[in-house]
Image (tube, rainbow, N blue to C red):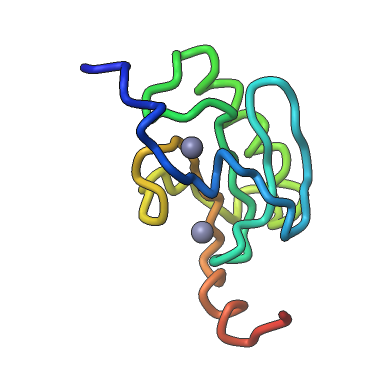
Length: 108
Ligand SMILES: [Zn+2]
Ligand SMILES: [Zn+2]
């Protein structure tokens, strides 16, 4: 449970928050944008870490739900909290059942 070591992270693409894709929402806690790799909405915590407080977590999942309901359709998606790309910075995807199909079809 060490909270030190943040300074030892040389580069984190989520901290950088480059606006390469569509951004849907942002506030002081997090931002929601299309994942560059998956082309589905994802929420990213503004702080570098994997353990957001319960309040922040609820806020982030709520914001992601708002965006995903609008973009993917209500009830057609589920939260994927597996952090494959950046395992040490909290983020969560909203995946619909066809996200990989859209990815194959391309579009960008
Ligand atoms: Zn980070
Ligand atoms: Zn992704």
